[in-house]
Image 1 (tube, rainbow, N blue to C red):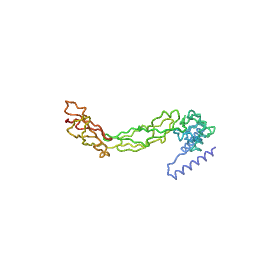
Image 2: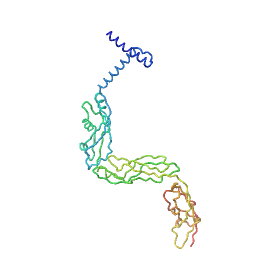
Image 3: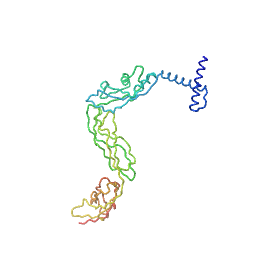
Image 4: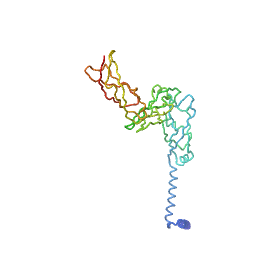
Length: 332
C-alpha cells in the first residue's frame, strides 16, 4: 500500500513539474491534483448513473405519405415534420439519437381510419406507427401535432372570386386608388359537407402600413380548415399615389327646360377643384365632368340657382364647385 502511494505521488510530481516547465505555471500542490482526479471520477460516475435512469429526448421526424389513391385530393396543408418525445433509459435513447440524425416516418394512407372524407391520426395511431421503428425499451411520450386531421376531396372543385381583405394605410397626402389581385379567381377543393358553404375566398388580414407608392407583393389566402386553394396565394397591386390639387373650368349645362324657353346662367363656366394623384394629373379632361342647373328645381322668387355635379372621372376626391350657385336668366 505504501509503495502504491509512493508511486502515485511520484506520478503527480512528474505531472506538476512538466506543467511548470512547459507553461511556466506556478507550482501546483499535490492536494490540488488529487482533488481534480476525484472530481473527474465523480462526474464520470454521475454521467453513468444518469444514463441508467429514464431519459426523454425530442426528435424531428420527416413525414412521408404513401399509397394515396389517385382519385383522392388531400385538402389539408400537411406538416413536413412532426416532433416526437421519446422516453427510455439514457443509453437507449442517446444511442437512438446518435443513430438517427434525420429519421423518416412513412405513413400508409390506406391504413388510416377514414370518417366522412377525414382521416384522424391521434396519439394512439402515432404510437402504433412509430413503434415499428423503435426498439422495445423506448416508448413514445408525445407527438406534435396530435391529433392530425387530414381532410380529402374526390376532385370536386369550383372557381371562386378572391376578395382583398388586407388593410392598407397611407400618409395624409397620399391616397389608395385601387387594389388589383391576380388571379381574380382560384380553384377550391373541399369535402362534400363544406363544399357548398364556401362562396368567396379572402386574402389574409394583413396590415400594410404607411405605403407611399404603388406596392406589389404576394398575399396568402385566408385558410379554411379542410379546404385547399389552387393557388394558395395571389399577387396584389396596391395603387398608391401622391395627392395634388387641380382646378378646371367647366361649362354649366341645363336640364328639364320647357320647350320654347332658354335658361342662361351667369357665369356660364365655374371652377371645379379636386385632389388627384400625380400620375393621373394630366389625364383628367374637362369633358369627363358634367355640371347642370335643373330648371325644375328653380323657385320663382330665387335670383340664383344651384349648380349640381352630375358626373366626374374616377380617381379624384375632395371635389368642390365654385361658385355653388349662379345667377340665371330665362328667355322665351
